[in-house]
Length: 131
Image (cartoon, rainbow, N blue to C red; front, side, top):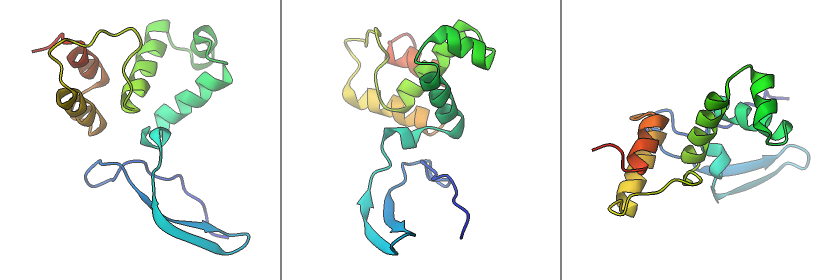
C-alpha cells in the first residue's frame, strides 16, 4: 500500500487553487477523471485546518479553544478571522466601505491567499481603514 499524503489546496508554484482531476478507489480499483473542486476548506493551510479541528472539537466555545491551545481570546479571534477570510467569506459584523467594489474585494482576498498581505492588512482593507 502506498502512503497517503494530505492534498495541497494551493499550487506550490503560483499559489492558485488546485483542481482535482482524478479520484481512485483502492478497494474496487475504480478511477474517475474530471474536474473536481477542493472546496473552501481545501484552501486552508495545514495550521488553519488544525485550528478548525480544535475549534470544532471544543464545540465552538472560544474559552475552551483558549485553554486547549494556551492562547488568548484576541489570538483565537484573529485566527478565526484569518480562516473566515481565507475561505472567501466576509467577517461577521464587519462593515464594508461603500466604495469597496467586488473587484477590489476579490483582489484583497486574492492577495491574502497568495501571501502578499497579512490577514490583519486584509481586514483593514476590507473595512476601508487603509488607503
